[in-house]
Length: 85
Image 1: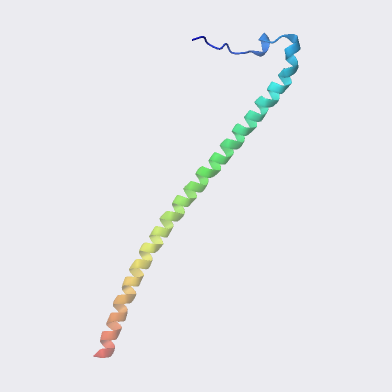
Image 2 (image 1 turned 60 degrees about the vertical axis):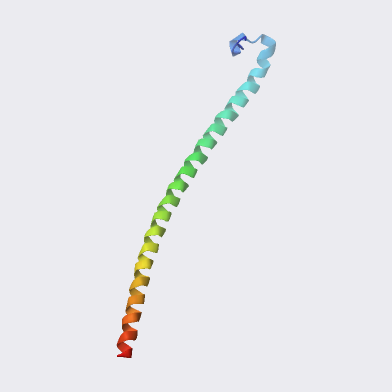
C-alpha cells in the first residue's frame, strides 16, 4: 500500500499558484465553521446545564407540593372529624 504524500503550497508550480487563493478561501471558511461549531456547542452545553437546573428545581417543587397536599388532606380529615363530633 502506498502512502499519499501531503501536498504543500511550496510544491506547487507557478501555474498552480493561482489556486492558492482558492485554498486560502476554503481554509478561512473551515476556520469560520469551526468557530461557529464551537460557539453553538458551547451554547448547547449552557442550555443543557440550565435545563438540568430547572429539572432539579421542578423536582424540589413537586416534592414540596406533595407534602403540602398531604398536609391538606390531614387537615381536611381533622376538620371533618371535628364537625362530626
